[in-house]
Length: 327
Image 1 (cartoon, helix red, strand yellow):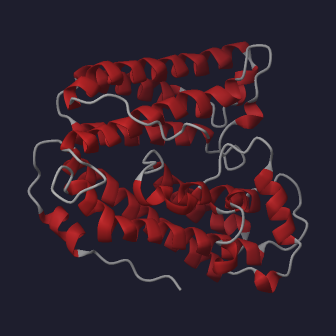
Image 2 (spheres, rainbow, N blue to C red; image 1 turned 180 degrees about the vertical axis):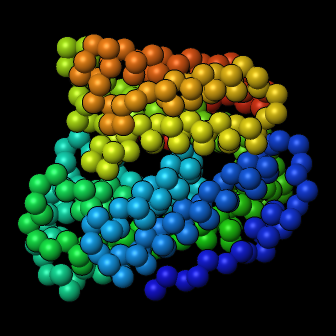
Image 3 (cartoon, rainbow, N blue to C red; image 1 turned 60 degrees about the vertical axis):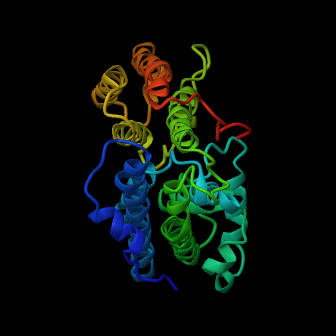
């Protein structure tokens, strides 16, 4: 059973606080907590909609809204979302071996009565979350069985995961971040460690954008792979790129007010992404379309380099552990 979302004491305190100079407490107050709260609400709405009507077409708007909200926080690969593989359970991508489709087929052919949120939480992360729902709501081929029970279980499981992550931030991890450097904080021994953790999220997300969201469909000149674009079935490949850039820019703005080169690089990459008329990056299979996507990729690479050169020193940190390592 999904619990109604409430504004915890810490969240209330942060929301009522007078805005301070940009630093990691502002990132927490303005970016992280609102982002996870929005994701929890959007997934709860999706789960409720699925209970009322599990028609795939009818659920697509709620699915799109939940995916939008996820991209607002997807780059935050630390803290509660990393516990028990929650981030992968929310979105398992890339999935080059098609593990999600294989696991999902087994669930579809299994006993529908056994498909509950608790049962879904025990399944492979490849079959769960937004990627699992995308295959059910935008099937490339006819599904082997009625997907209604699996749609409802997957949506409810996703909402529960989102709420768990949101609650964990509110009741513990936000305080852990805010008290960086204070006595008893064994996670962040100094305040610069907290800044470094957030700086690493920005750099890691730009690398993910460059290497995965753009690099996978680009492939090579002789062998492009438009079919590898993220969320291709739901038409979100370019949307995710645009939203990611906007969300990262907003995060950086809360970290430091004085990184003009980094902000200009963000604006350049965003302008290129907004001008690109290629929703699922199918154009990478043509010379002209490929060139446009390569230009965007180069802009993201330049943005990453600029952030390393300007934002890192401004925060007095360097790149730390890359959360994407080993993926």
